[in-house]
Image (cartoon, rainbow, N blue to C red; front, side):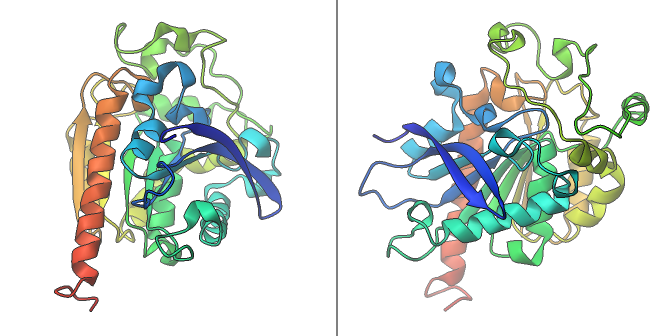
Length: 311
């Protein structure tokens, strides 16, 4: 059944990575593998909730012919409690590349000939967007089909930086923010399911300290990362973003910094706060992500076809 979401686990680099997987119906040639990378303090369920399947990236992607894997990043899900030296963003990049290598040899990654790996597209949010962008900047990511990032922290306000500086960094996890209000990460009432704010409805997990330390430095490290990205990039900011600056100058700066990317699209998603995929407009956003992935497929096919440079 296309769009059926299943729990999966992979033994990678000495750890177990959990996640959610959806595939096209049997016999359908997958268009590609879409690896969905959640943000900080979240998990794979950010991209799919059983009681909100209409907004699921996994259901929609599988219905449109993609194999979609939403992975719990290292330090989350089955790998929660991972040693601190393996929690940082660069360490996560290594693990996710190892995962892609493994999937290239497994049925989930099999292409139309049964052994050829599928083209890989990344969809990533917030802290996960920093991981995806580092993957795209790495020489191992040169063959990525493209990536769509939302909520990437290119800048922080002085107040936010002061909050970050006050967080003690000697623990394994970031202490709960406690005083955060719903509108820090969500749009106005009516733009999301209020059950998400209850203990039963939250899609939440503890943030590993090592990744927090890396993410806190992102305004200083991200420009150098973006300069090395060559894959096409779709960059989204939320209309009601309040966890970081997100005015028109931010996507403009991202376009300027992505100097080596084949092409860049920026978009302001209406009707959402920072947690874009947890809003009622999630389906609209996911349709844009998948449309961009389809364009990447078309351009890639043209480049390697009989009239393209690939021969």
